[in-house]
Image (cartoon, rainbow, N blue to C red):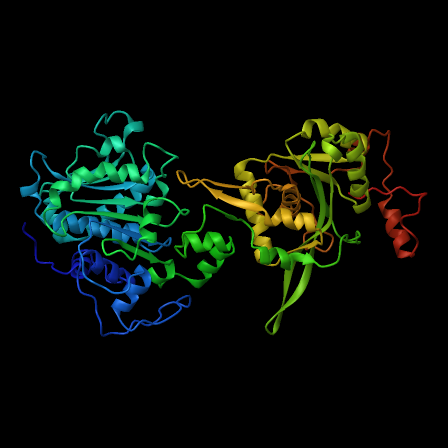
Length: 584
């Protein structure tokens, strides 16, 4: 084996790749991978407001983020880097190490019958692989030494897309590759066991390992399956200490898989597992950005940016945030003048609850330091449900009139409901003189709606009446994540219900300006013109008096709003039974 002049990997990153802003933990991680000594003299001070402590030296910092009791330089056969998002784990550390291993060793004596050594960077998807490929390519183009020495100064060494099987079939193209003149090929590819076998591999990166899938799910391309397919490819290079390595890089995704196993065994001498939050790996990340991400939920934040192995099924809403939203002791809030009310219902036949909610929005002035700031508050004023006794099926002809009674009392223009049983319920609402609107509930639209609810709770922008069942439904919401596709699903925990959570979210979603059903109107709101949107995001005009007459089925509709205003001015009772008033 011959090795070029860069004995220190930090020198290689700084002098060849021109990466001069490595954070302390990135430098420590690179040194640990290459079994280089760590500094024991210089103090490492906190570099970000989220940091919790200073470290007396690199060894102490290594011990803290590796879980080991001491640092003993060791050449590992594999290593796991569990870093938070936006920490440079793939495009800086991963891409840089790929180039280091591609250029710092002479693999020729160990190739046997293989024409070249292959350094694969394997990602869950072609798109993810493309990001890493672009980073590696940019490093080569940015470095005159790399470009001239290993590519002969020719850009035709880059192949943006390739497939060993059929270059004419785009669906089978797996990624990009770079051919070096030292018999090394760097390949960036999507995870596929069939593409891995047969290669001579001294170094490999499993990028976003936690999202390959685990045993019992994707039986073909699990993290374990990919790892085991690579093992024979590395065997011929393992006779030389430090030449062969599989590097697993990922943010966490549940408590399962190869990297989580490494985390559990991180104190073992032959295991290197670094667990590093985003702000430690990347101290330049803005506090404002992190605070915004935190509003998405503490479980999300701890997993994605805190690099914590949270459970794959976790509570979606913060129980403390739910408790803060409750108006203790108030079971019902009567309608008030000057507000536009919205409503939502979630139909149920037998076992579930037929839930119904009414809410409104207010603007309040809250003190922020020495200043007062205008803030929006969404109130859930009414929460009620019906349930069939002894398994009996609920009769919509009995329930809908009760719902419509509340709609008329609060002056609600229409009630929102999902698509289930919408067609059957709409004419029953119409018979009672009320309008039912459809909100198509899909996994994607539900995630957006629930995310909006989560933001409102976390920012203390939602207040609701005291209903123990509704509170429990909110606390029983679970976020489930797929180990294979990272797909999120939000639903009730096993043997629990989410009926109240649906109607609360659907009410509050109508006051979210990013929502396709945003109502955007209350009497005290600054806008004078009502602009409504339907569930598809299309603007719909506010119903006129004639529209309402046609809908209710009467010959004419006497709009006495002006008379009502005059009565209010004269302090007469606007609810005189002899008068007819329909609030638009």
